[in-house]
Length: 202
Image (cartoon, rainbow, N blue to C red):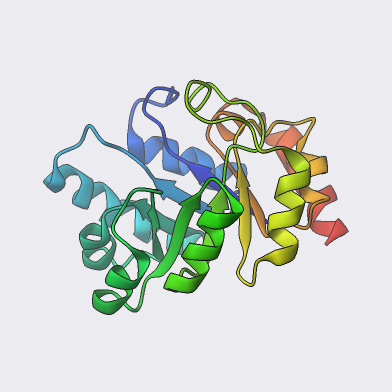
């Protein structure tokens, strides 16, 4: 099972985007998504280039939210498309080398992403989360399990995942778990313990 961290300047206490990425790397995650809307294209490209070199040295896969141009120019592992982004098949035509993840909020979304050629999907929100509380109801574990069992591509769970419920999520046979708050709040020692238990369980 992989651990997929997402950057967020609102929760970033390190002082810079690159410092937050370094923190995620030292924590021990497997994948990182750059998700920053407040940077200029020039700044974003510079950070992506620097972060990707660092990530590769540590065997971490780096992706970026929606910016296929930055992903291509920085030679990132992939791109994470939001649910209302450009269709997967259009990105695939121009950037066939990128690993493409699509955000989904239902089984219907997952089926569509699969048909379009996504390499993986992130299903959310599994549990209640502040960022989606006003417009999306939690899907819960039963729907997560149903999606995982019916999907032909990897399913990564996102939304309200914490130290307590992560084991229940893992029990649904997900490909991975993704989070923002979880990876920003957990201490390294506790995360390494959780990671060891879950990795050994697979």
